[in-house]
Image (cartoon, helix red, strand yellow):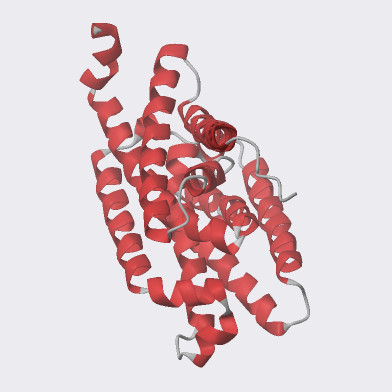
Amino acid sequence: MSWMTEPFALEFFRRALLGGALVAVLCGVVGTWVVVRGMAFLGEALAHGMLPGVALATVAGFPVLLGAAASAAAMSVAVGLLQRSGRLAYDTSIGLLFVAMLALGVIVVSHSGSFATDASAILFGDILAISSTDVVVLAIATGTGLVLTALSHRALVALALDARVAGTLGLRPALAQALLVGLVTLTVVVSYQAVGSLLVVGLLIAPAVAASAWTRRLPTTMALAALLGVLAVLVGLLVSWFAETAAGSSIAMAAICLAALSHVLHGLGGALRGAGRGPAPRLA
């Protein structure tokens, strides 16, 4: 079994696993709300909307995380403004901004002659390059996200059930929606280094989808999604190590496979339980 423990002896692999686990916990908690509220498209748009900020920060020599945060925050604010104007549907405004930000990012990348190597890391992640400082930043971001989610749990539940009822109860649904968008933005920004902007939605959505097959209680779904996300990170890193595949893509694929396997097993379990009960009694 020494071959199996070999990667864990390397410091950069342990840092990648720790950083990926922190990302998976945040993605599992926030991703549960994304699935409940049907906000997967927003998460995808924000992941691509980071590209201009990341590209500009890289070209200018600024911290990439700050560029990603500024770009994603600008897009989330723009989505909110377009939605409040009432002139465009929510998904239409997201689609337009998504394409605009992606196009702007590609323009910046194509204009820079020395950007080819960095673009790969932006799109597909570079989790094996996570430093100790990055782990600290991820820990702070994850802790902040968990605290905000816990404090706003009642308002988010009311928002998910009925926004009008939430307003009647004085829970300020507009503020709860803005906070949820902010949490998605935070999660996407801190996760892109692990799996990249193209794959971040896989880690955000798949563990929550996998967990939802087994429980309907939100806290339990969040906890199970976080655990499944950590498992996806572990499996993805091991596959990447032994099969010599891209780490970020392997993690995203592991998360998707866990979601598929979870629903297959749940379906088989339901079929077996139905068979064990035998045919339904006849009324006549």
